[in-house]
Length: 584
Image 1 (tube, one colour):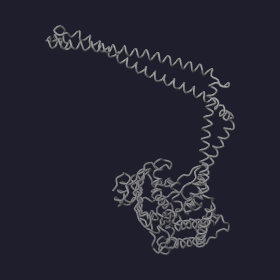
Image 2 (cartoon, helix red, strand yellow):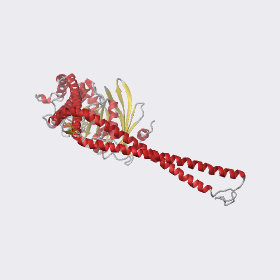
Image 3 (cartoon, rainbow, N blue to C red):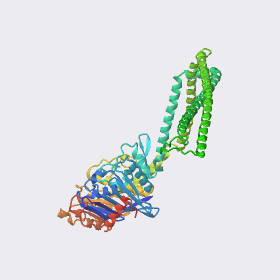
Image 4 (cartoon, rainbow, N blue to C red):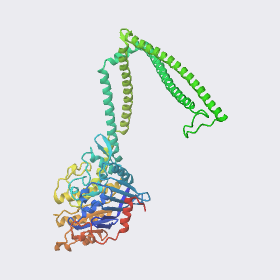
């Protein structure tokens, strides 16, 4: 089981000249501030910095083209801690994991983009996240949002609906079971998915087998072709062999003729060159003709007369040789033309014979049609045999997987564990669970028949119970547990006290966790009240061990980013170096 622990977050906007920086505690972190100050924005920034696009619209006020997010933390796997840093600017994210080189991904704003797919594989590898879901007729890797779902209660839908705090899973078949199986470690939910996949493959193969049978039944000529083919085959194949050999010989002779034509053309061009050379030599006689370049009388020494005579002799000799070669090649061409004509006549005779060729009243053309049907029948039989073997293999694989009874048994065991945890939580929050199984059995729960504060408390009970179950089972990754807006605005003080006492007990046993609380500093009656004053809440309920992160000095709205003097240049430089590809 790999755990993620966050250590710090930087948000810096050069365009707004504002920033936010905080370090996180390893236990409980209380994010507090006035309503709409930016508490939810801080939690969403953590998720966004890790490459999650869901809820990105909530960050519009702080997330301009210059905004840089840097989230730093540790992964703990088998007691081995490894540093991890996420730097994000728009659609670019860079991740530094331990001593590995920084991995950068450009263009991740769209969940269907190629780069986001690359990042998704990288993310899944780091956190061993391999949940598979059914999308139409195939199994696909779950969206990254599902990696956060057990560890996050969002401010809006998270307090109303189960398993909807982050991500949209409406288009995945049987999402609830796959999701619960995965986080509960029930064979990672893949047995049922594999069975579904194998069954789909077998259905496809069986459908193809039926199509083959229907096709053969609707084509009686297929059976007829087998019998006719036997009687016609011997003579037909003998004739086809003769025809094929003659045609091959014709092609060979035509190729030979083409080569001779090419050779003849080269010889004729050579002859033209020799003719022009001889013509030029006759105008370059020693002591008689002028040099074609300088117009001086050509030298007339004995040596020059000898060379001239030798050149003339060489040209005449070469010209004679070329003439002989042309003559010989032309003779071969004539012979080749005669052979080609004979072979073409022979093929015409074959074609004429084919038109009259009959065995038991069947022409050659008719047999060719029947033979093609026979070949089709053979292919169909071969394909049928292949499909039948595949179908048998799939049947064996399905048999080896067994039925789903053992999965249901495992689910019932898990439900008992969950029910025990859930009963404790609802009791601590003074809520009664309806008697129907659909409100207490883990695999049956979809919603609760409550509203207002009661709904708020039972949703909190459910999510913390499931989080505890996931940690206890230890089959998957564990992220920091984040609860946004632990109090409803209209909550009464008695319920407020109950929730704080509940969280006081629960958070001490959690891994790193985050809760957000709205403050009411403009109400004097609540300033020193231990149910409202953050310092007193921390002291009374959390023994002053929680890390308090104040937004907007607890007075301002929309104030996550501030323009106080920036003193974290080295942190910003590190984030920039990751994004620019400069490993430090």
